[in-house]
Image (tube, rainbow over all chains, first blue to last red):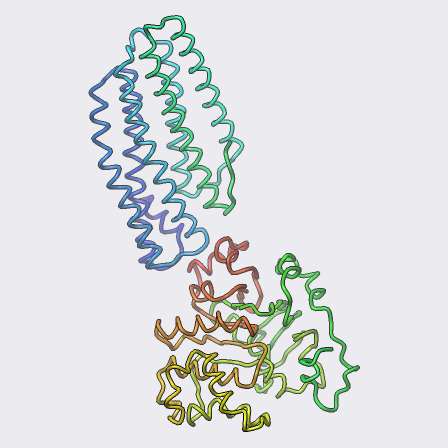
Length: 228
Length: 291
């Protein structure tokens, strides 16, 4: 309820427009919560070597699709019925773009969980620990980026460039070490490949977070910036 | 001095008494509100410099400076009572008719201050036509509404039939009324009456047309026709429109000026003003947070 009241304060226009924005933000909130849960379960599947979790996470994709359509529907209604301008318009357009980023993150979470199939956790504890550390960073970035977007917070682009660089360097180091291990133990190639893919999906979640941050900055300042 | 400006002068005024100014130079010290790139890029048809207006003791406009670009549509927006319509009527000295009205500042048409002595007001209002909020055709036939102005201005009557068709075509009304020109103008619908008023305004060959909320009394279909007409008219005329409808300003204008409490708050291309207004108060107004 608190968020809904904040939503109303953030938007101009009529009561009906604000109600529609409440609805849009509510769908966006539900979608975000669901995908964050999926990402966390994806990490858990890696740590606990729980293949059963993969099925549960995959089942959630239907709900993700459904919520994405609901967000799209609210966007359509707001444009068709209320013709917003300026930051309200930017928020609505950017919502469509970040919904796509959230949606793709959900698929990444499913892929992360799936990669546990070929990785024996007990034999790769040190590497898995580092993968999980990377995953926690990406997950936190994802959560923070959406929170900033929904509350129209002003973000420091330099700080986000540093966060992105840190994830990129951790990711690159992990890949190097996994490849070194494959070279040393060729029988471990399949597990190694799965782990490479898992880290790639985790790094992509951090990339989605950066894209969401770019949209947040656009909504607040109307300026396009790139985190590279 | 060009022919247009000569025509603005009363017979007794000597041309050498009035020297046209460089209108671009007027905005060199106004870059905080008037973007320099626009003044450099577009040809200025009219220039308003530090215009203030009072009705008795009521100060309704305060130091407005604004360029009106040639063959472009400029929208004036702002909350009720911000001085939009007063500003519009100052552009062709319609406010001179109000006794308690007092103006300070300058309004230039092609470099000549229309408030200087020696300006022929009839010629001025011929050059700067006006269309009002409510359609106000004369109580006469459709044909006579068009020919009234040209006859007053002494046109050779042999040209009249051609003119009637020409202006009704320009106002996108010919197809609907060509077989009923003798009927009363009041037999037309509201939208048709407004287009007739536009045709009437065109018949005296203005160079600038001022629209004061031209669609406020019309349905969406008639509104769309007037908006299309305004878009077509800018090829030949310079247009200034006052509107309360943000979507209409966004749809029809090339430039938008936002007024509040008698001051010009922001001026920019319509595209920039409606997407990324610079001032918070503009953002709040166009997105319906106040006003």
